[in-house]
Length: 265
Image 1 (cartoon, helix red, strand yellow):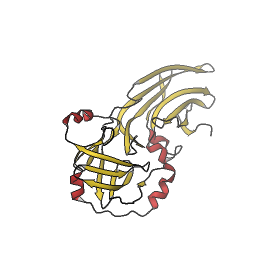
Image 2 (tube, one colour; image 1 turned 120 degrees about the vertical axis):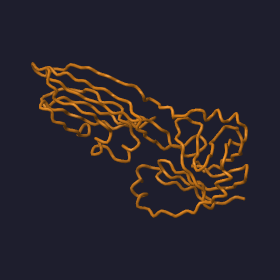
Image 3 (cartoon, helix red, strand yellow; image 1 turned 90 degrees about the vertical axis):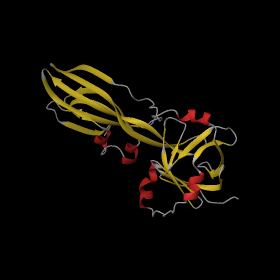
Image 4 (cartoon, one colour; image 1 turned 180 degrees about the horizontal axis):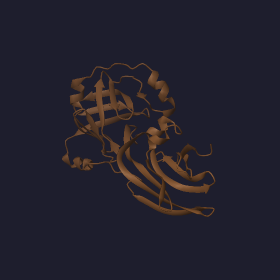
């Protein structure tokens, strides 16, 4: 039986995040029986690819970059809560059948499987980090006039998770996980250390919109130039799997003072 319920999702676009925060939230009552029926592994009825596995109140995805997510069912709505809350209209649910409308507007038809061979799709214990995990060290000598300065920078991988919301090819919302970096910068003039500290992406909250910063990674800090105002670094805050990034100018004066501003400002 078809039920014409529009697919709702909260926080789908960063540009509308502020408006969505002000929108009144609808209270949902969980359907425990429907939740119980959803337990197990579910495959695409057509391609027999694993779409997700449900255990307790958590959905697990075969894609190793997709974070597990909390879910519940209320009336005719399948609610998945990750970095964003996404609501799908349920078309049909039975013990071994689950149909719902995806973000694309298509109806995704899933069937439950008891074939344990599909468990191999969930062998990964930790998400695979893409374009991350590399320790980068730089040792640079620069000069201004007769004075020389020694610059040490080190990009340190961390275990701080950065979640980026996206949709898989089935139109199901998932949270891809990446890891942030901490960048250590030290500046020496001879044997004297003029400056030294760790930089985290939160240090750039005044230069980068909070909605972007939340899903961005502090990718690097590189030396750019030296002039009468000091030593200039360029901090790169990048959105994973995207060409979009913010470039922030970090200037360290010759007396060790720090100035941070958006590049080009």
